[in-house]
Image (cartoon, rainbow, N blue to C red; front, side, top):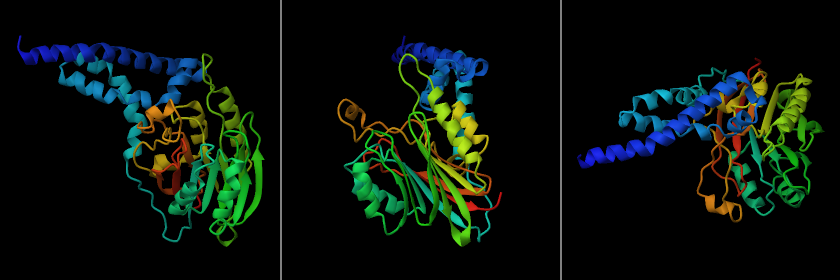
Length: 339
C-alpha cells in the first residue's frame, strides 16, 4: 500500500463517521420539521442555530466527492439542498427598479448589549452610518442620557425608554418629528412603536422590536418569544401608515416566527443585502470564559429590518463594528414607492 493510499484510507475514516452522523442527523431534522414542525423541542433548537449547523455540509460533501465516497455525498444532498435554498437568495443582486424621485429613508437597528462603558463608540458608529431613524435595544439608563445628549444635534427627536434592568430598555432617535410613541407590552421584554412625520407631512410608523430569546435548558422552547412577536404583529397590524419593523427578533430565518413576520412584511437584507447577514454573537466585550472565543465570527442572523409593501429596499448591510456589544448593527435604505 502506497503512502497516498494510506492517507486516503485515513481521511475516509476521519470524514466518513462524522459525515454519516451529520447526514443522518440532518435528514432526521428535515423529516421532523416537515412532520411536527416547531412543536418538537429539538426542531426548535436546530431552527435557532441555523445556518450555523448547515455550514459543515459544504466541506463534508466536498471531501466525500474528493475521496470517492459517493453514498455519503448522496446522503448529504438534503442538507446541501436546505443550505442552498435558504441562503442562495442572499447572494443574488438587487434588481429593484425605483424612480429617481422616490423619497429614501435610511434606518439602523442596534442592540447595545446592555453596555454602559462604550457610549463614545456607539455614537461614532451611529454617526458613521448617518441614518435617519435609529432603533436601539438593550438601552440602559446609565448610558442613555450621555448618548442622547451626544446625538441631540443630528437627532433632535428622541423617544427613549431606558431601564436599569439588563437587556430591557428601548429607544428611537429620529431626524424627523415623533408624533406618537408608546411601548408594546411584552411578557418579559417590551417593544416600541413610534409614528413619525416624515417628508412633506408623510407619516410613517416605526416599530422597534425586541422579543425575548428562546428559553434555554432542558425545556428549550420559543413559546414566550412567539407570544411577544404576536403582540408586536398585532400592534403593527393596526397601523395604516407605511411601516418599518426592525430590531433584535431573537429568531433565525428558519423559525416559524420569522415565517409569520415575512407572511406580512418583506426582509430588507434578504431582498437587497449581500452575504449571510450574520449579526450575532460578538464575544470581544465579554469576560472569561466567553472571552476565550472572541475570535469567533457571528454565526446567526437575528437582527432584521422588515418593511410593509409601500417600501422598496435599496440596500442593506451589517456594520462591522459593535462597540463591544454582542450584536452587530444592521442598516438598510428603503424607498417609498407606494406598493
